[in-house]
Image (cartoon, rainbow over all chains, first blue to last red; front, side):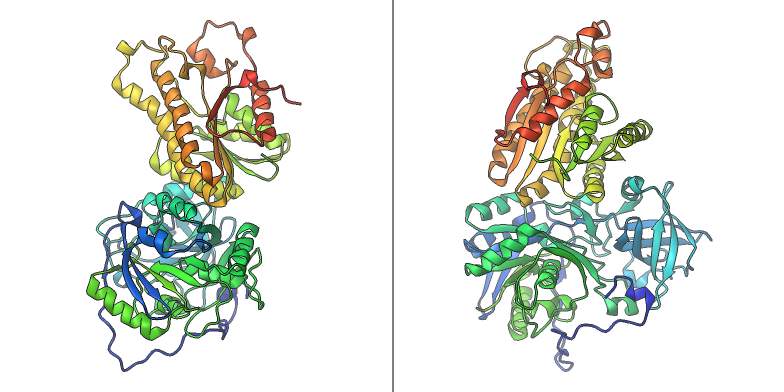
Length: 373
Length: 242
């Protein structure tokens, strides 16, 4: 499927492989976890709920990953840096607008979601109406960055494609001067770039922080290495998590770019051949590695664009475990978790996490889900 | 290290040794990102090098600013992909003429350390994690004999370069198992604007050209497979490039 299909044609059908199971409608929704309201300074000090496919659950800290993972396992992270993806400015008619970059389509051209007045303190759902734009409309985004709308989606007028009107080499300094990371209304204050970068970020592909990786610092990563755990990397253009627009949110995640290099493809192959486990850091890594895996289960180096949806019953080809945040039972992240650990065990673990006071959202605590073997 | 197709970031790249290193790396096939504060001079330098063939990009930015360092790391990776070679060449002498320590304002010492020591630390911190994850990378610190010799009036600069050398040694020790190497090179006295600023009375005919020094340094990087991380060397001891 083309990355442009959301704008070009009828809504694409989703691959049926591993489609999410219908959620039970009679069971009461569990009480959600409290959100963490600020990033922790000591990255690996968060709590870690280890949930095994056989139903065993352990309450630990992220730093104990060095004991939970075994020599011969491979930990694969997403090294995408986070875009300064929130840009404020005005339309040609003077209306205030915030745009959030969703993905880079080609150099200088991005897909983005429009928001109206209000700032990060205003919950997304309560923001003013976003301006309605047409192809050719201009956006002024700070004193030295302008963009031109090139297409408006049939899904929602808030979803647009645009082109930044600056030279190739000048785009990134201008974006970083004009933009900030996407902000979250539940936080105590505004986020700076360093709050959302992982300890190994490289190319700026991610619309929002690949949040599972934020738990890892180099003290933990070197300890894992010394204990015989391999490290691998993919680059995955994780998109926006939510937009407050029902039509857009129902279509998330949009097709996302991924890249798996030869070293990581070989490491995945070697790990599995020797009986080790491949542990993905974040759902984006699951999507990248599973997209790079062929029918035969072999992960091949390459790049692509994926719309893979993963849920209950999905037959995993490449990934045996997942380090991720704390997810609520109604949501696509929870569905993806159910591809590793059966839903009843996940629900029991969620109840236990709530009783233990685990925190959720972007800067919350973590869980390690390992499939039964 | 093989340079062809590799991503390289050079600070202080709009003139002198930085510009000469950018030209030499581009000539040998690296994909080069040139960084400096002044956008216009940097763009002119990049256009000049690009005119001779080779891939160079001008990325204006200030390493003495925390936001700026993150923007440089991400911007450079967006332009040329993962960075495999990081050259810390940018530095400042501080106020001119260079004062005795007893005449040096505390703020001026802090400002020199900000550019010459903390700036390189920031940029390395934003890039070396990705190098470590991939299991390889080289960070080059451009040093000075003022890092070793206690020349009067070179206080702020000398202290910053001595600290930079030691920073490189500690980086090297911490990342020894991860394949990321750190080297300090003292380029020696060169005919540059910085040299003229520091010693306006010097006889320029006795000074090396930055192009010749850059050529030695890059030839050394390219050939040095067994290069020991954490070492410091003088460019004058390196072989003349073939």
